[in-house]
Length: 241
Ligand code: IPE
Ligand code: IPE
Ligand code: MG
Image 1: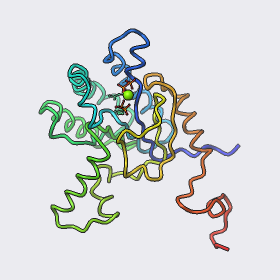
Image 2: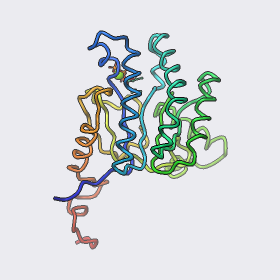
Image 3: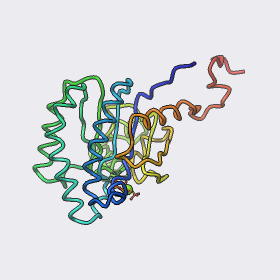
Image 4: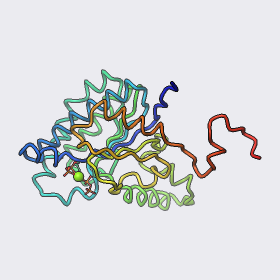
């Protein structure tokens, strides 16, 4: 049997924490805590499978509109999880990057992000991008604003360089858990040619098996990038007839 192609870069909208908690008559925050556990498990599984970049959506630009106690809880969870997770990330060789608008985060959270990035800077098995206070529209606008401030021309190439994920190639596979089939302002620019896979599992339940099922689904797809099937099929001659 042909062995599965492992996507170089997997991006995930980690959705369904709240519903997972509600099902158990628990507060939403309990779902977010379980979500951190699920992220740890998923990151480890990705390293083991040879994924080189994992990018996760942890808090969107629009999530500020949630009740204050949930927003506060998520901020605290981030600050706490950071300190706790760094040693285990280091053990797995994971380098952490935080992607998103930082100025509106508290000084404590901002300092935590920098510390965690620095503490994992020499790890080289996999990059983990945590998109926090991130929005695809914010990303496109901040890239354009930076180019404009520098007096640079706005081209596809210069924009790609100015985007928040310019340190990694675009995602090959974009997974959304939780059953919704929408992008919710995630990687609007970078997901132009990502294969989209939707899982009905709530994020805390998204285990190694579910990850493997998503990778298997990715392997069923034919990535054409605008070409014809004949051009990209295995064994296709490089000469166009
Ligand atoms: C995703 O889970 C995590 C965040 C958006 C922070 P949700 O909190 O959106 O969970 P559901 O969609 O309400 O179940
Ligand atoms: C997307 O989930 C954001 C994150 C997973 C961080 P949401 O739960 O916020 O998305 P919508 O509101 O259902 O579109
Ligand atoms: Mg949700």
